[in-house]
Picture 1 (spheres, helix red, strand yellow):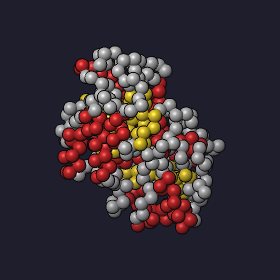
Picture 2: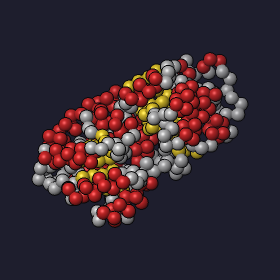
Picture 3: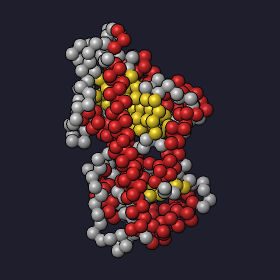
Picture 4: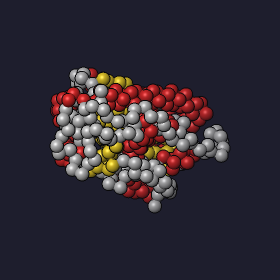
Length: 397
């Protein structure tokens, strides 16, 4: 078993008036659905990589559910997910759960005046799967065909192959607005000639997530023994094995951490092989922040592992070739190393030694930059709310 247990203001009423553009209601819009065109409740469809046991993506889902519950209570929220038992953080189900794979059924549920929202993540890329990219593009085209407006928020765009650029351009141009979480994603859209939507440069939406405050350690950073947190992916390579052995040999206290159910078996295997303590299998943010006071530095192969470290005011180091890791580390002025970099082992150990030598100064630098990012996250939330208001106002003008 893992050592860490699982654990408003109305801005738009949502009441439509006349049907926009003189469109007639679709005859087959969702059998069994309530009356659709008069004193009715329109739908907002929320999608992302939800329901697969990845903490970062589940937090993104919770974040946007919170926004819609608070600011747009007059709309029915439909969450597209892999997990049919999805619930809100408080255990309630203030939304309709829809099978993300059943596009035929989703098409029947959609109608003009509804809104489709892509809530964060790195879903428009074809490195991990071309089929996944085609699915999300098909969803955009389905919504457009049904007369549904589209907003994409907090997006990381790419990496995309030449084929991916070609097939994604027309689909992304169907959106009314696209918010990007880093400059690389914004530049990718510009290079792809995605110029129909309003483009916006923001930060990752989880900078605005209401996480609990990190728990302070019982002793000051200078007094306590350094503990290195390592957030891993279940991807085997020789360089990773060598790094973990070196960290254990040089620094002693190495704590493996997982943020995804899929990574837990590999974490247990590595912990047993290296003689480490049981991994922290983090399945909710409270568990991470309850333990974060013990950590001196966090190395992470996952983007939201770096973000959790920053929100906990813990210095971080990125590991891997994924551009989103490098983009985030650039925002935080942290180092990020690829496995192929011939100097990565020496570089990582050197950075850790500097942090351990002066943990107070390192933590203060994180605190200052994180405060700026959190402020930007609040601004991004208001931008998103404004976009939703503007789109819905046009639909029901």
